[in-house]
Length: 187
Image 1 (cartoon, rainbow, N blue to C red):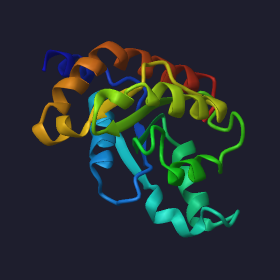
Image 2 (image 1 turned 90 degrees about the vertical axis):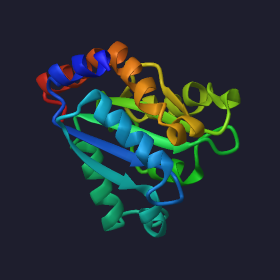
Image 3 (image 1 turned 45 degrees about the vertical axis):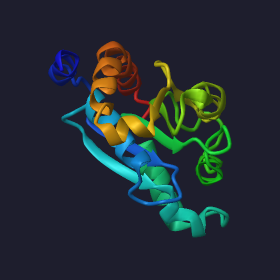
Image 4 (image 1 turned 180 degrees about the vertical axis):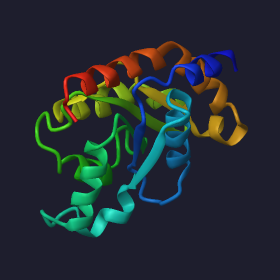
């Protein structure tokens, strides 16, 4: 818990966190893991959630108002957590459809944490090899290693400890990127 205390004392410029959840099921373990990452990095921040499953009907009709509002929520964040279950050794098509709504570099160096939830360690590199590249293409700044969470860690309560250690190491880098973006007025 010592690492968590360090993070709580230095929230920095992270006032708004958006968690994008690419799970087809609303209120999933993936969403819980995304919120846990947000709390570990910026416990005092206001957190918004974009459940991509709720946008499914509008993702393929450009200009959908709900999708536009979700994009605005993402673009208004100081920190973005993009959470998805591992699906066929990659992220979900649902998440891909939402991310396709963003143009190249549209996130404008937004501090971003790629997060994947899987059943086994076998797919732990998917977060780096599959999710990170598309986030970087649309302009995310990913200064940390991606987070891979086992479903069993969520169920057993080990997630908090995993994220406390991770945030103790990477939280300052995320807050520095968020602060640099705010300083140059990229928001």
